[in-house]
Length: 516
Image (cartoon, rainbow, N blue to C red; front, side):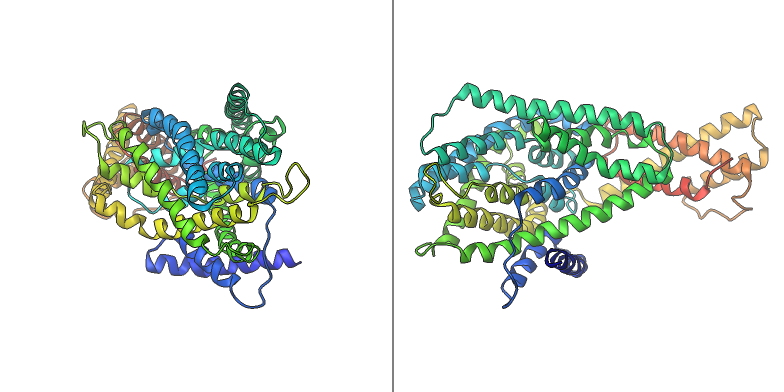
């Protein structure tokens, strides 16, 4: 009952924070972390210790899956090289830089410093996606940041396992071929399991039209991908990401408009609840971890700021050479792109879960020296990145000149609507020549489409109960759907425009009801 009460309090807290976040136009994750710290500092509030397994198995899969579904596979194909470099090279560089800094500046034992570096080496997909939704970044920049955070898990996980092994064994040898093989097993095996799960889900969903069953399948899919991959000793995170990316772009072919709208609503609620809990937990954990620090650890805030600065510096140096691939039209390196990509790469719940899973005892059976400080520094860096970078990210993007102007997005959306309406009108004219549909229905639809193109209000005429009219409208929405996705694949519209217009078409089709 104690745990249930805490979850309920966090949900209520998150609802209030989300309301103020929208009103103040600030990212909710940053406010949730601050609210969690505030609640933890209230006298009488019990210390919260969340098992890392609970975060990994219950919270992460649906959040990762939702982030992967949002990823543009089309734009990913254009930036896969820099994503690969960041997912491997930057993870190793960040881990090494943090490790050396922890030894040189804080006197942390080398083995634990390596663990700390591995924990903080990769960006967090949940945090990156939650903060990035409200930004108007160009497609390639957004995909680069989001894809890197989704695919660097296997690298950081191998580093973490090797680092913990060294720390616990106090100087055990490291086999590079074994570490490389484990990296291949985690990443490659996880990708294979995710692809198999996506294929199985696609077969099942393509053969059902039951909204309840569709919703259950959609909710179970990320957990199935994660559990099956972990059971096969591969990366569950990679498996969920691959499944989400593959299934995310086939939703318009798997289900009808009514089910898509229902799934969207259910996913929105689940993501809101889980993100609210997880970001609040990060804030709640920090004060209780600080209380467990041994004497003489009072410099941890300065140390956390230093580590965050090291991570940002290394990230800028690594992303700068990759800016040509992100914005090839420049033909030169762009500090603005490097700055935005670096500032958008925040840490979050995954580093916290990894740090909490560090063993309590070493090989000699005694307490693992330095573990409390590693936990505090990890949580503090996560809080710093979520609060400082989260609250200032929109300003950094706006000052960089990379943000898409609202007028540009609105103009692209309106031009695309006109294109879809013209495609539907051409189809109507071809049907009119065949005389396959009553002329009254054809004329009514023609007048409606013409009014949309002329930017004039559609005059109400008759009722949507006319079966011929509804059949024709359903057919035309199918034509518009095909045209919309063709424009997207031809790189003529953005991912944002695709999603907005797809939702509008779904709402229009659902409003027509079923035609028997």
